[in-house]
Length: 184
Ligand SMILES: [Ca+2]
Ligand SMILES: [Ca+2]
Ligand SMILES: [Ca+2]
Image (cartoon, rainbow, N blue to C red; front, side, top):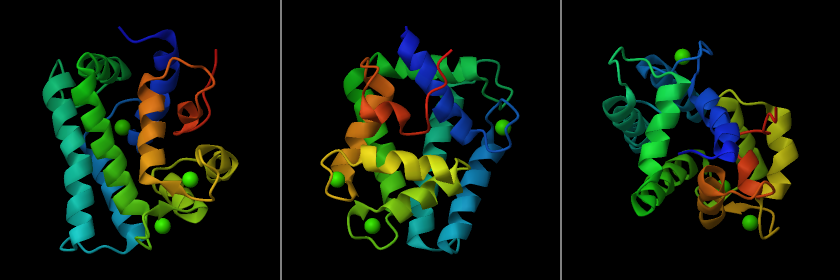
């Protein structure tokens, strides 16, 4: 079962995918995110970067819709979404593989100068592309740079996503990776 803290964190991840903000996620939301990203990056559909990002992100959607869309209406409610992650987390090793893959996709797509580091500008680019707030990105970036060397490395992003999904520490840095938590 998802913990109280996980249920506070997961909505931020859900909202990121709900591109049209109608409270449900469907394939059109995923397409919209992929298109927004392609546009910001200037990718053509034949570009390797596009294919890689599309396969990574759309693969996540296909896995979710296959496993989580209980009533098969091609829409995921937050309930279905959180149940999917709850089930996936039961096998922690597989789950970490999945979220490492997600981190790698995000990293590959937004490390624009391909220097193996996500700069503040590149991180802001990610936030803008998925419809998150620019001022939030600027606010949290320094904190996400765990070793304070001025950049986010792939190892840091993997650690942050793992913290986001799995940490039970209320003060874990990765908790706010997809925006500040709305604590009730
Ligand atoms: Ca939606
Ligand atoms: Ca970079
Ligand atoms: Ca760093």
